[in-house]
Length: 278
Image (cartoon, rainbow, N blue to C red; front, side, top):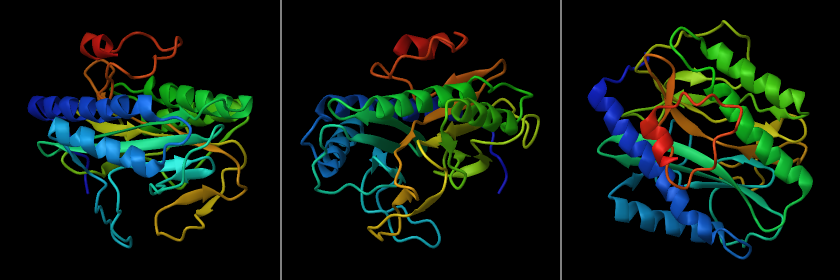
């Protein structure tokens, strides 16, 4: 499968889908506090999508070798790395949870995730979530025509490891558009100057999964065919944005009014359209 380059109409469709995906996270944010269940979060997101006129890309999603995914989003708690399935267990003070939302609007996919701190969390948990967020932006900053995918992965890996954390290797970002998962694969580790060259019209996710302990992972104890956890039971965090390669740099498509602030170290070369909504 080859990389698809979006034209002006495709880019505009992806802008809409990306904004809606981010607005789902805006909508659920006030509700995420001790006592809420991840099933509650899933229900709230479904209600928001219905109001938007979007649909969930994850509900009944079934790549080869997998059982159908049963929920409208993914919720990965504490040492869950990714693909946690919402359930009826209440979140408690001190938990951290990644909420990963992908919507489809007019055939286009918008994909993003955020970390949420439940009540007062440990300094270690806060630091992991903070450094993971900054790691994602270290990768985003490298996006421009002529750069290589290896530049993104190298920036993420070196920043995370410099701060004492490890990068999960088995999962990566991906191209996105009319398809949920398209080419290219976007590794969150690697060597600069390697892999595919970035060109205008490419759209892909950057979504590093960073562990507090070692990078090794395994299937979750739920044996649900989806959930992945850290092998050493250490905390894991993830953030995700969908990014467009523009003629001069990048545009983050999954920004909305409630998006977390962009780190101060990021040059403000984001298009005014994106900054205004951020």
